[in-house]
Length: 80
Image (cartoon, rainbow, N blue to C red):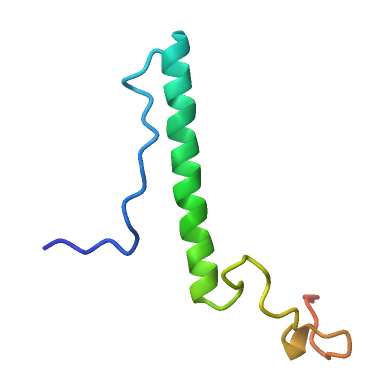
């Protein structure tokens, strides 16, 4: 049984088929890395939009913090 992928396919940034001493292959490697980065950033942005953290323009939806993070909160991160 196969499990469906949660995310669309991310391009590979394989290097085993390239000769990085060759200028054209180095350019191809950089192209692959850029495509990989663009795909990952796009997925991360879409996730933040779905969660309601940012809007479609990438701006924070809210700057409010939970009550336990306010300066007047009695909670502490100190242990022992």
